[in-house]
Image (cartoon, rainbow, N blue to C red; front, top):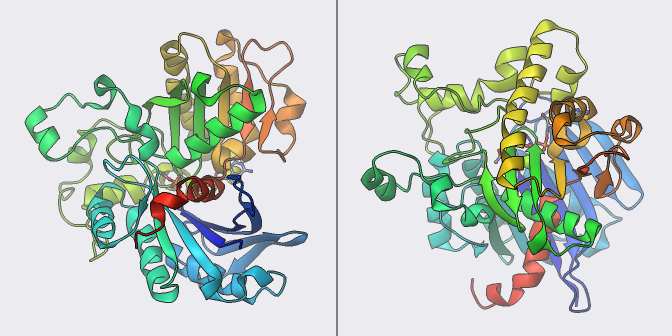
Length: 419
Ligand SMILES: Nc1ncnc2c1ncn2[C@@H]1O[C@H](COP(=O)(O)OP(=O)(O)O)[C@@H](O)[C@H]1O
Ligand SMILES: CC(=O)OP(=O)(O)O
Ligand SMILES: [Mg+2]
């Protein structure tokens, strides 16, 4: 009998939930029944996008949805009330819930969320202040509302377990580093796993032979150097703050900057609560920096099409910081690159940004077909390279929910029997 999988992706500015049915055969291909996205949590009012077959809702404004948990509750209600989705007429129909958890510490793969895993994820919350705590509010809501469903955590950090020691070690006192587990972890790994699978089937090349420079550019943005299908380097670090700037995040800055920014940097922030213990410095760099601090908006679509000086500056900063990773990753891969991949909300929809980034690495042999780049992407993988480009540039419509649902089918036996 087909079973229902609810796949939940709590991003820093959005909640995306997809509903799948398990296949009748032994394939690892779930069938998507519906997909709901609530975007704009950092630029209210939040908006709903819903797709089930031909039924589509686009941009419905939601006044009372302010957090990832509100978003989850709204979507669950919407799904169970949707008469066109008889497979999910009642909450009890849901057998598996997958949760995207950004920081998984040393967990090398997905885990059933029991008390031990829950507490471990909670302990890691301080290292992903915009993510782990909101994801756990959803886990708690699921435990209350759907007590019969099996909760499984998929970690953004697991994909980067292959980082070599010379890349994930920070040059600081190693006693302190080991005791406090201070190292580069890296994130967006569920998306990078999807990208590897998608590019592998698009190019008909085995995943373990693929070399990719991948850019996941959304509210949070990161770059990943993928060698032989595995993470060799990535721009995020101990936390998702490092590397590229984002909607509300500064990205990498001189670590001393905070000492000069405010003297109360080390004090608990006003929003420190039982759920989130962060200092004023962390609050400033995670929640009050990035595009929001430069331009007043977190909407990179608006920034890209604006002529205001502050928007142009933000755009140029992003292009510059992205380029700071592309050429070094190209050399780390010895120039043997199957594709430069753009993904995430900005990577998939930001044609102007793609154009500027690719222009910046033109000397390496990347070039875009302007028409293909300017056409909204529709398939999972779209080749936007110019016909005479030496290297391929692809846009991948990443789907973290699908990647997690596939994981359930692959690992079902491991989950069964464990509560
Ligand atoms: N047309 C567009 N051009 C560039 N950026 C866009 C466009 N539409 C949306 N975006 C940006 O995509 C980002 C959201 O990306 P997404 O990956 O969905 O976010 P999250 O990190 O919450 O998962 C937002 O910063 C939004 O402004
Ligand atoms: C890890 C991270 O920054 O995720 P998101 O882009 O979804 O906020
Ligand atoms: Mg995201």
